[in-house]
Length: 344
Ligand code: ADP
Ligand code: MG
Image (tube, rainbow, N blue to C red; front, side):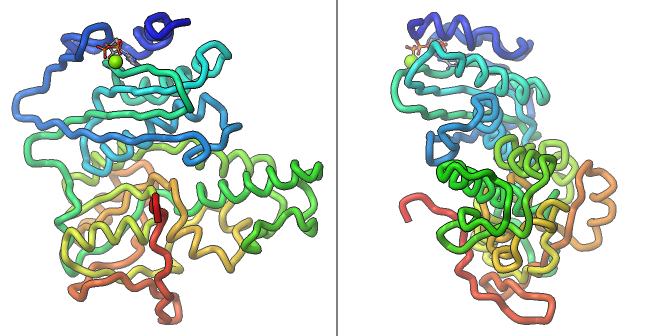
């Protein structure tokens, strides 16, 4: 298949038509209608093979996740997702990979009524760039700049599942390399280089849950719409909550106290994550795609009633700059936990 056949076969009809798309795939550019009184919110993210996904990752999941990270950014701005562009580089077009990629992509796009309106297709090492567009009523986008001393800091859902899922997949790959089964926890192949080991062998349900949290994150679009009217500042948690909250602190010129033992954890995480790594996974692991939001303390119960996921208070905003991670017995933990950065 050449480039144009690929576009026609896979992308031209991938997502439902929307009436606000005046011109979709097929011309030099797409044309969309933005409602009067609204603003466009735009975001772009790239996934690169072996950096952002395992080379054995399911193409369905890659299709899902490449869109999910863009929608998560829109959620962090409290924008409603509407359209997207897909710049795709693939080594080959005829092995079923694209079909599965498109299936995963379409599933998530369909859930949020997002229309694929254009992109670029080329040949080379696998890399996927999604540009996602959402809208907000003028002036309603939630930024990183509005956090105030006295606000509480909350997160949606649970933290650390994806980071634990990543370690779990690495352990499984090691075990398979040694032709061992992923079974006995006493087996030395069940340790990573830094000594990481699971507390127990995951059940199939736990394995699927954690791998799902890593490979098919749920962008918190619904929660973000409910949070919009209360949030002083918001980010999505993609590089660990400590690092991402720090972005809010820098932009808002405030500090925060975060309570390490209040970070929300799933049942699978609680059972399997080794205590020596719990904080690292929850505070500085990657790929949570939850929302971290600063809001007035008195609004939290009202907001909670509007969300379809738990909202947990994990700390508070203070005047003094810097982020202090505090344990239950009042000790301050060292903050080498700053999240992942490319080129560092
Ligand atoms: P141009 O050469 O003008 O950049 P292309 O030949 O790259 O246009 O693409 C033709 C049409 O197909 C354009 O409308 C473009 O937006 C769309 N397109 C190309 N690749 C993709 C893709 N991966 N997903 C969605 N639309 C795509
Ligand atoms: Mg082009």
